[in-house]
Length: 242
Length: 287
Figure 1 (cartoon, rainbow over the protein chains, first blue to last red):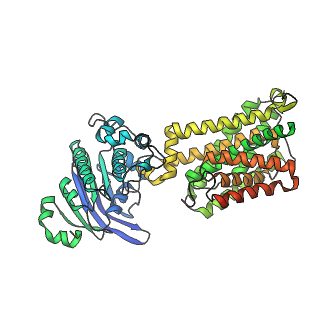
Figure 2: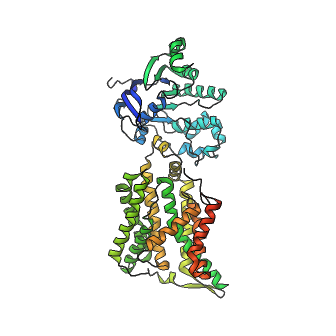
Figure 3: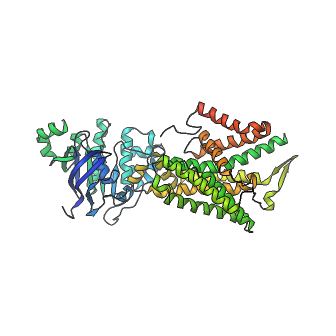
């Protein structure tokens, strides 16, 4: 795989370790610009490690990651983020010592290509998530799980990314809220944002993704469209436990 | 009664000096997770730099300002070239900052000698004013005001500015801050320099009251650690309250039980730890 203009992200044979445990075993995949790719797999398959490798939080020991054709492997996370990658982390990781408003404004950054993309502003985030507007002076830890998830998404959007990494946005949320998350992801896709979505929720992933990757033991074991995955009961049973 | 009022002022002024030192120590710990044992030495050198400049006929205010800038620059060098390599390694940090304390104290001995010295202050600050029969030294009132001003500035920076929000977020979750595109190493350097600048300011302001002497770095370090333990790690508000407590306890202790004053401070610390192990304003142990 070389520098292909329609790919936003290319992961090439990365090997990532946590201490001595070998997690990502020559993992390779690519994300096309403007697409939503879902990464599915059981607990421990290496999904979150993949997100952490891309973000530079746990850099791969071997292999390389290209973002918009440029290698980002080994860069510190803040530089990777500044290239235009936003993170909605597992467990939300809202800053409890900051108000909702501060959580949104503190990381705010203008888009890198303002002529191509309109910038997210505080008002627009509040339009997207009215509940946050009502609670803007509450501290980050005074929100419900669903509101924290909205805040985590809003916070990432305030950095005006071109590519969004979402790590289990449905985790621990009620079905009604998961539907909202689904709608939001669809809305974000319409803005042209490329998304890599890590999920345990098979149906949410299939509803929003253009392409699905199934991971097992640190490698991609299946790849295809959501329709194909919904028909393929072997893959569902063997790797997803559906 | 008049002695009592003057002692309150003395205790407050001492408390404000301790506050300026301990607040730096505390916020450095809060963000960087580093106990900077060289902090007392930074205080001492800040005092000596002010002294040298004042002795060379520089205006007291300018001397203070230069001392603050010198301490900030010195601490940037320490943070960038020494501490930066040891983040996350607590034992190495302790050895480094402990060693730096000895090193800086010896440099101070070498440059400024071993005999105790005091910083002269401008005449208008060296005078006293009277309220009824009680006569208060102007300089101590001035130190209390500066301490309160520092507290207001810290409150403003912490709660009203983006830098303050970045630092609070960094204390909460440093890794997440990086993932949002913020280079927290810049914040680290900034907070370390700010803390050192405060120590330098306290040294320059404290010189006229406490004097400057060999071994002072250790005394100041221990007292400010006590303040931080009482107030809680990582919070300057805790340092403010803790410093006033320690300042008062020390001043009145020396008046009423001269041979027992240090013990009183440690008894207070012990009581606070018994009632609230994380300190008066601390968020919890271990985080």
